[in-house]
Each structure stands twice: as C-alpha cells, then as structure tokens.
Amino acid sequence: MANPQTVSFAEALRVWLRIGLLSFGGPAGQISLMHRILVEEKRWIGEARFLHALNYCMLLPGPEAQQLATYIGWLLHRTRGGLVAGSLFVLPGAAVILILSILYAGFRDLGLVQALFFGIKAAVLAVVVEAVHRIGKRALKNNLMLGLAAAAFVGIFFFQVPFPLIVLAAGLIGLAGARLYPERFALASGHGSGTGDSIDAVIDDASLTRVRPSLRRAGKIVGICLVLWLGPILLLALLLGPRAVYVQEGLFFSKMAVVTFGGAYAVLAYVAQQAVEVHGWLAPGEMLDGLGMAETTPGPLIMVVQFVGFLGAYRNPGGLDPMLAGALGAMLTTWVTFVPCFLWIFLGAPYIEALRGNRALNGALSAITAAVVGVVLNLAVWFGVHVVFADVGEIRVGPVRLLAPDWASLEPAALVLTIAALIAMLRFKVGMLPTLAVSALIGAAYFSVAR
Image 1: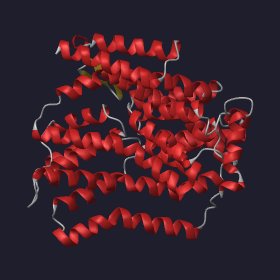
Image 2: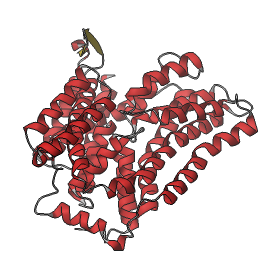
Image 3: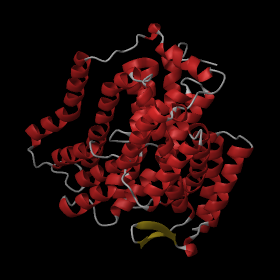
Image 4: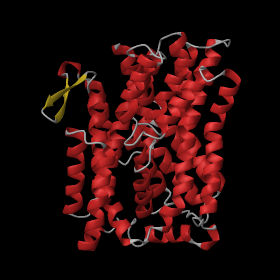
C-alpha cells in the first residue's frame, strides 16, 4: 500500500483525474468519493487529518469539496499538488457544462443528457447514503457527538439555520467541551492500529519540506492570487470599458466567490434574482435548467454559474459570434469563481496544519465534524427526495420548513435503482465506477423507453 512518501506525482495526477471525472452528487457525494479513494482505498491520508482538513474547508467561502481536494493535493505535493488536484476537480465538469450550455443555447434539446444522467443520480444517492454511514460511524464516537449531529440536522433541515451559525455554535461547544470533557471531544482516530497516525507522521516528515507559515509567504500568496484573480477583469475593463458584459460578470461572480458560505444553495437564489431581474442574463426559469445540468454533471454545484456566464455573454456578444462570446463568458466566470479557492487553501493550510496538536482547536474541530455529519445527512435527504420525486414543494408551520413531495410524481424506477445501488455497494461491496456505469445504462434505457 503506497504512503505519501512513495506516491509519485504522476500517480497522484491519475487519481485526481479519476476523482474529477467521478465527482457527482454535490458536496456529500464528492466528499464521500474522496474519503473512499484517498482514506479507505489508497490510504494516502489518515482519517483524523482528512476530517481536520474538511473542517477547515467547511469554514471557507466556496465549494468545500474542491477546496478539500486542493488541501490534500497540497499536503501530498505542495503547490503543484494543490493546483493539479483543485483544477482537475473542476475541469471535467466545466467542459461538460460548457458543451451543454452550447447545446442549450443552440438547440434547447437536452433529452439525451437527461437520459444518460437519470440512472447516475440514483447511484449518486446511494453513494451519499454510504458516505453518511461511513463518516458518521467514525466521527460520532459518543452520545454527545451524536447529539451534536442530530441538532445540526434539525437546525439546517427543519429551521434552515444558516450553515455558518451551525459551524460557529459547534465550534464554541467544542472549545468549551475540550476543557470540561477532553476525552469526549478528541478528534476521530485513523483506520485503526495506528495506521492513520503513521500515515500522518509520514506527511509531517522533514523530508517533505514542511511549509511553515510566515508573513512573507502569506504576502506573496495573496499578491500572486489577487493578480491572477482580478487582473483579467481589470484588463477587460481597460480594453472594453467597465460596462462590458465580461467586466460585469467578472465583478459579480468575484463577489459571489467570497460570500458562498454553506454551499451553493445559500447564494443560488440571489444569483438567479440578480441574473434575471438586474442584469437580464437569464429568462425566468432558466436557472433551474442550469441547476439541473450542475446536479447531473461532475464537479461542484456552484458550476451552475458557468451556465449563467455563458448565457449572459451569449445574449450580449458585442461584435463577437454569440457562441464564442458565450464560451468566453463561461470561462471568465469559472476563473473568478475558483481562483479564490486556491487563495484560501494556500494561504491558510500551513496555519491549520501548525495548529493540529492544539487541544482547544481539536475540540472545536471534533464538534464541527459531528455537526458536519448532520449537514451531510441534510444534503443526502434533500438530494434523495429530489431524485425520487419529480415535484417537491415546501410546507411552512411557523419557523419549521417541511419538504412536501407530490406523491403522484414518484419515480419508481429511480427508487428501485437507488435501492439496487445501495445493496450493490453496501452488501456486495461493488465499486463506485461499476455502480455508476451500470446505473447510467439501466437508467438511460428506462428513460428512453418511458419518455
């Protein structure tokens, strides 16, 4: 079994590409995919360190799964590892959504795509359920942790408590708990028998040229990333003027990149409103079409902004061909959305690593880990309801929000496929790739016949 000291950069590149191609199912499915491959299968990183990195990424604006990939890539091969891991997590989905956006704008016919991804969504739901079970089994070590997970689920699912508040509350509980009950707030252990500890010890070895935090390094990282992030927008403003659609998209989605706490759903309603009512980039209802693309393609859900950027430039092409203008708008939107993610990781990761042995911080992160299990369960339930039912509404009872699926819209085939995928993965230990492939073929065949 390879360890971080013997993992070649070429081998890591192949694994990151594999993860990028299979990263369906939103953050829950993507985090579970990385846990399955990097912790369980490859054992390149220990359980405790995986959760430590995940907790930091959950605190950041932007897609936590992509940032987690960047963090682990940085741990293994420093800057080039982080760049490759984070980029390959995004590029496959970006390419697919660009193609789908072109088809949408030119032909408005996504039937083939819907057929292909009908079965994939059911398999991804099985992956998410397995993730909740696997991560929860390790993170919820006692009744106190179980209670924190349950409270987080109730808070976000029924009361829609903002995710940052859940994280803040869990962190404060962990800080206090680490002083009062240190044994109950210890971070989760590794694979057992010291395996996780030994893996993390290899990462810490001096031969890996451990990066130490410093103001000089932080200033250099901030300077380079700010030039890469905002430089293209400034250049376009000088060439085309500040009212050009590319400049407006670059500024708008740069602002979104720093406020997307709690995942894409926290800001998508605002993005849709601004894109339709203020900028006129989308027609009413088109945001849902873009969201459907992002939910059924690999990569972070926030990739839906690429669809918005494409249509905005496509409908305001200036002197360019509309398709070319749309492609440029999509690429610029993707650029300003994800460059900040690398900034947060390369800037903060050395400090987070330096604090790994701090008891108070570990107590806070342990509590946050338990809360994250509840949040992932919330994502799993939300995703599952929307996979099995075509129409899902909401009922409000005072401050309580309840999902109200239309039972007439039940998709029996999706339910059967999900159950079959769960049995295959949990009972017979079938791999993720075969499960996704078979589910896609069966789902496409059913979708094509039924529709």
